Length: 250
Image: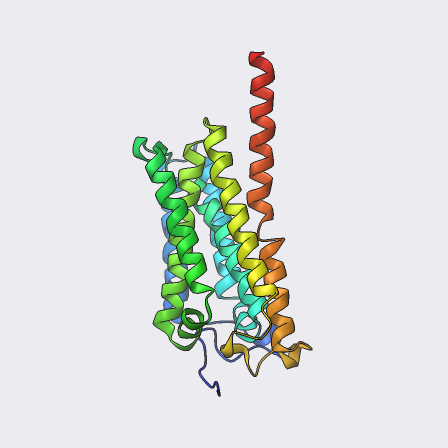
């Protein structure tokens, strides 16, 4: 099977042309400018809520790096770079944006809200890392943004729900344990697949000194280890807090 579609980020970046491979897409830049304006407006209305404003600004910076910097074109070259892009999107940009929004409402503290958020995010994450949906997203601009926005949207939903349950460590630990397990499972399936599965990178990995299978194995390892770390850190912190509260009650 041949592959000639040019993904949204433009032609796949090469080591020699990496620093020139910025993404100057006008609609994207306008959207980021609009988001920056909304963050500034929020700060003007709520000048004392500096922590959430800083969190929103941090999320904005991550989005800029992922979609405007040469990392965007690099993710067109390497599946491992795409996985790193997605990890940063859901485990860095999403929690920053989730925390920066208004404080949790009552319905966000409910168990169905958290379970629905976790289930939706896991489903979306697995779907877009299956070979056929991934190939669609990399060959069509609309598919690309459907992938990215659904990943980000469900991740923000998940982090909002998780943050709203800070006073219920057992519930948080249960959900996080499941999330760590599924992330590790997906990473292992990708890393130990016997053949290369992602056709959009058929012709783009050799410039980076990797075969398609080596690139895929690296992607699986990134998902398996670094991809789990933010959730595992929260899980361990929640466990430590739970133990501490149990000792205080004893």
